[in-house]
Each structure stands twice: as structure tokens, then as C-alpha cells.
Length: 255
Image (cartoon, rainbow, N blue to C red; front, side, top):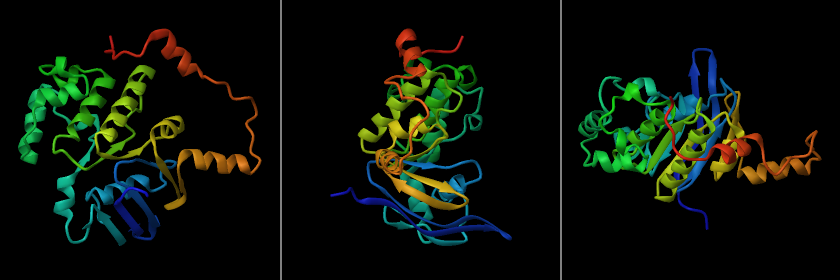
């Protein structure tokens, strides 16, 4: 039996004057999965997520999050979700502990800052200012802040963009660990290898519409069944695998 549905989107529409960015999108997200929303720039995926996150008004359609209707209970939805901020959204001159205490006050949550930092391997940076962190450390901290209110669902928007291979692979492990601990994860990414490895299911959006939804393996098998073949034989490893094998997979800071 599939897990319970935790997010239900039906016939979602978002228009800006004469332009319709989201054209009747429908999909479901199951509790405890990593669900990828994929698509080219301008496809409507960010608008869709911002509506679910209560950050943008919809034009029409129905959105239910953990049984709460977006139109009737947006405040209840806010209590059970965590949304990743872009790294520019943090006070650069505050240290990590101070930023976490700021969020704890906003959420009225009981969270141990050091325990939270330990989850993302940043406990040794507790007194460091945000601006002093490397790119990978900033992304890990950004994800940590989504967990402060102990949410049932977190939304990660292109969390590994611009990271080196070590930081990217370690962030994958962190996202899987968050899912394994019972939190549903919604992720957007332009890296298809990332979606293939991380996501239990993906929805592909283009021109404001869902054009495919399934597990990555099923989508790939369906393409192969049409007779599609790559121009060159696929090797058992790629250059990123070589890079990780030669340089290691440990957490690193930029120098």
C-alpha cells in the first residue's frame, strides 16, 4: 500500500493578467518520500511551490497540505512546513547560534542549537558568522533552519547549485537522512543525476503543466521502451565518481 497523501494539488492555476504561469497542475505527494518537481526555467515549478508554501496567492484550484485546505487554514500549513531560504536571506554578521535563536523566537520552538548544528555537521561552527562559511556550509545551515520548527514537510529549492562534488554528495546524504527520519522532502533541481539518485518520484513540469510523473526508474524505462538509445555506451562510473574516489568524500571548507 502506498503511504498516505500529505500534499494534494488539483487543477492549480496561477495567472498574471493575460499570462498563465500555472495551467491546471495536479499531483500528489506521499508522506515520507523525496518528491522532485523538475522543469526548465519558466516552467512554473517555483510558482507552484510558492503557492503550496503559502507565499503566493493562487488564481484557482485546490491545495491540501496534511489535510489542511490552503484557502481555509494557511496558518496551520505554515506550522508544519519548513522552507529553505536562499543564503542571502540570513544576517551575515550574526553567528550560527544567534541566527538559530532568532528563528526559535519566530517559531516559538524548543530547539537545541548545538544539536541542530550537529545534524548538519556544523557544531564546530556554532560561533562562526554566517558570512565566514563556505558555500557548502551555508547550504547545510540553510537546510538546518528548515528543521527548527520540527516540520512534517520541507521544501528545498535547488539546494546543491554551485557546490563542489564532495559538498553535493554529502548534501544528498543529509537530505536522505532527513527523509529517513520521517520528514517529507519536496525538492527542485536542474541536476537530473541528482533527481535520479535522490527522488522517490518526480513530476516534470513544462509551460505550466505536468507532462510526466513517476519514479525516475519508470520514466527511464518508458523512454528506453520507445527505442531510445544513447549515442555512446554508458560506463559504470562517471568523472564525478573518479573525482570523489581520488579526493575523498569528507566534509570540507573552502580555502
